[in-house]
Amino acid sequence: MTRKQKQSKPHPHTYSTMGNVIKLNGNVYSIRGKLGTGGFSEVYLVEGRLCPNAHLASDGTAYDEGNDTAYALKVMQCDDDEQLRRALMEVQLHRRLKHPNVLRLIESEIRMKMTRHHTAVQNALSKTKEVLLLFPVYPMGSLQHLLDKARHMPLFDESSCLHIFLGIARGVREIHALGLAHRDIKPGNVLLSDTYTPVVMDLGSSAPLYVPINSPRDAALVVEEAAQFSSAPYRAPDDVGITGKGFQRVQDGETKSHQTAKQLAYRGRDVLNHALAM
Image (cartoon, rainbow, N blue to C red; front, side):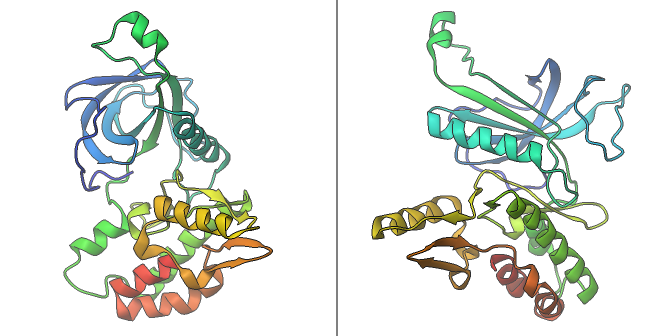
């Protein structure tokens, strides 16, 4: 997650402001600000310390006992079964994906939503659940952030374009290997590390790669889902086929990466956005 993600309108069920705290698996984190808002989620910049037995990745991450560390905390409020199903799918997908080009989940928790102004009985009867996901923070921000603040184009040379594009393709390929498509690959969903390693984020829109299409109604449902979970400028109609045998979402684009990367070096933002839509 990024410190520089554009903030959105207030969510009706948000944790309040800077200075408050939030607990995750017994650890206390101070809220330092809001990073963004989604359909039924909020993302906060928090600081705190992981407990020594936290589930850290085997990537050299060390437990720092003496200092607070910044994290991105995604809080999803699930008011119905469908929202809870999608939230749990996102957690499970993160747990299964261990790849340098996919955002790493540090910890997660699923719990009942406790509302301060409700009585204990009301809270006990409530069906609303919270799903919390803790991620690393990427101070460089997203690829979209870099494109937006760039004063000159091209922003990257050919070698850098190829490095970034191949990294994105490799991350998406890992998702495809699980039989799923990301469905919302765009510059805003690609974080960059300090070494410009691209990291694919926001797996909440993922869906099966193949969906049977047996009727016009089935096809219409696929289009409706795409409108709900995929950003319109990055849908690629030339890479989506609906036939009597089924529907295939193709988002990897790795076979086109070398040719596309050469174009990126010279044509800048528009080509990069188009390439990510492939």
